[in-house]
Picture 1 (cartoon, rainbow, N blue to C red):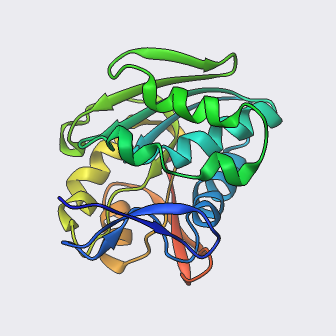
Picture 2: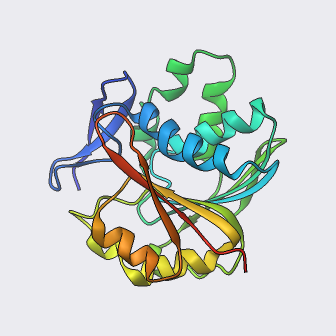
Length: 222
């Protein structure tokens, strides 16, 4: 599928798929959206010093990279599993400008490490951030109570509704530890109902710029 590099409104780059009229990130700002949805509403909300994270849609590596930055600042100890069916090609991820915008020494090197690490193998990116990338379809996920937090960053309901089904969220519920949290940029009624059908407590939150609302889903403590 053809991919085009685009610049979003906060200056950060993203990937656009003209065949689907779909982007990897919000046109209003890739970094801005990722920080709002996944870091602020997810990572900071969980508020643990040792966190196990599952990302549904590793994509450009932006969410993993922002999480790595937070791990070094706070500091946190993070085990991060990124699932991706179709990894972004090297010539594409190399032109993403996330670390350039951050303007801090060493950050580009860590972003590259995320992408250059072998698939299906744990890799220590920094002393407090280790990464496992798994190339697989989301429908094949079969984790059981392994994660405190899920970043659900699949392509949108409009183009891939099958990724937002009750069956998928059953897998997400099972993958989370008790009291685990799932955050996503989406907020459609069918998505919320699919989450609730699996036992999630679902709340609507203010969305990032350009989007009115997003969802956060919490697994029961039992």
